[in-house]
Amino acid sequence: MTETASSDSCSICTEPVEPHTESYCNACGRLFHLNQREDLPGRDCGTVSLSETHLALVFACNACLEEPAEPVAPTLEAVLDLSEAALATGLSEDELAEAAAAGQVSHRRTAGGSLLFDREAVEALLRTRGTA
Ligand SMILES: [Zn+2]
Ligand SMILES: [Zn+2]
Image (cartoon, rainbow, N blue to C red):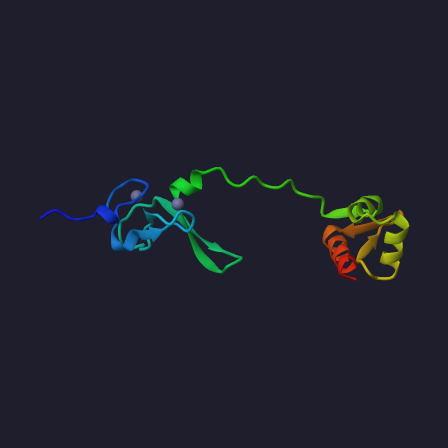
């Protein structure tokens, strides 16, 4: 008797997948080995991790792991000074300073007297202005 494992072979190494190593990649949907039992031998042809956003296990086969990750957006400065924030919002520095003084946008004032804004707060201000 020969095993019919045509549909149960790993997409990575093409070896048959045992029930305890059967995993499906969340990216490509293909079957791959991932040993889910510490008490049994098994190979790993991918990884599993916990997604913090979805609070779910995320399986990824080695083929998908090796794909170049999505280009990471350049990290934007999280803190803007008054002129940067004015540029980002399209407001004048005076308007922005007034908005800050009126408590419409959370800000910090440095020891030197300049205003600093969190980018998120500036974006939130833009949104409220946009819908007003
Ligand atoms: Zn495999
Ligand atoms: Zn995959």
